[in-house]
Length: 288
Ligand code: KIV
Image 1 (cartoon, rainbow, N blue to C red):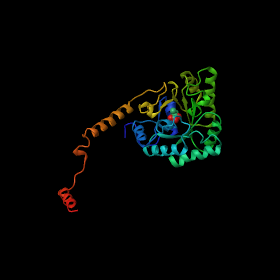
Image 2: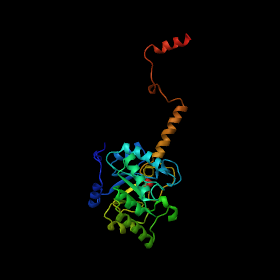
Image 3: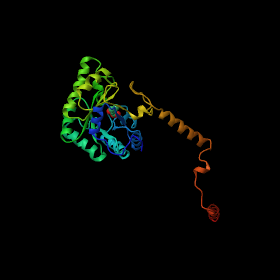
Image 4: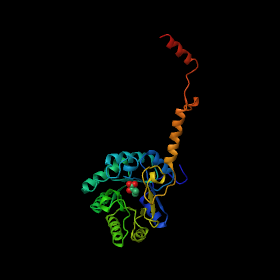
């Protein structure tokens, strides 16, 4: 356990206290048991099992194809690795939009089967109604505004949102409508910092930015992006804090080289038979 991680679960009230105190909130994605343990040990506040898993760990070319069952399997593994941070489950595309009943059924699966604290839904279409229905059913919700990858096609592709005053107002109105619907937290993705600066003072709830400047109450990045694991392209706002992919390739290449060169395994990597048993084995084989 790190010095940052007393083993009591954070609460939404703790997040509000951080917002009120101006203490930045740290959020990151994780998709499996070891990455959950790593982010816990590093002392983050919120862990999101994002549908970015579709691309980072499942190899799809967008977030759209990932299913509820796939997300649940990953989310359950993360739950097993976490104690202190709040855990957010991301409802995948097609699992909540059609009706309040559908949204509720999916969200309840994330809570009952994967033990999440909150569920996240992306803006657009029916989202505000779905958010209200979930909140009314007692489910804490995270809203996601700005660039929302599930509906990137209707936003004109993976591009920054809110770059004109009118477009910025749309982002701000999306955020305010979700706040009015009762969401506990908002993620704002890929908007100019001026939009975040204009929105932040209008919100009672914590605002977490990704590619949205420094005026949010906290920041979120994708685990594979910040550690340099993912081979695909990364957005302009990503800062790489490590080259885990490079280190991993070098490690596996060193192993392959030693196997091919006969250096691995060395005697210390193996087991021995008890005294006299090797000789007895030879006798048994010779007697056959
Ligand atoms: O799916 C995800 O990882 C996300 C973050 C980028 C906020 O939605």
